[in-house]
Length: 79
Image 1 (cartoon, helix red, strand yellow):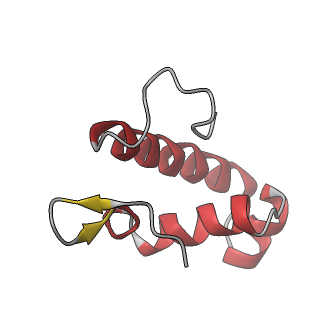
Image 2 (cartoon, helix red, strand yellow):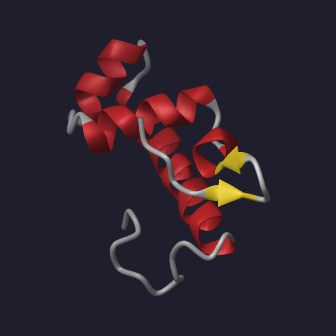
């Protein structure tokens, strides 16, 4: 399991993402599955999967920046 750092004293950044967002990002980046396969496994259309992926990445990026883990100009942040 990935620990992305602490927010405040207890909460991991990972816990600030909804279950759906964590699942999607895990499938996309850790399991390296194509979006079409993720859509199929989750029972979503491809367009819905793309939109949810975009939003989840942006949410994670903002969390990482706001908690001092990454900088806004850092190219390694899920571009």
